Image (cartoon, rainbow, N blue to C red; front, side, top):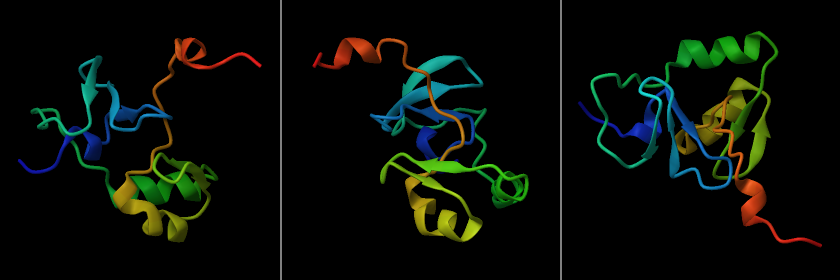
Length: 98
């Protein structure tokens, strides 16, 4: 099997730290560089096209910008854009007041 958790369609990257995330399938936190498990499913182009055809958007965790079209997606493909992200309820602890 080749790839990493980061390339798996079930991986939810953290919006600030995309190298850590949550596996939706196993419901565990993981590093994106970890070896993939038996549940690994690479993101399929057909699924990505469907997101944009339905009027949805994706987000590039590396460039920190929204992606509105399939053509834009192709420019960011290696960054593993996602339409879902890990919800970090403790992020407030990492911010400074003021």
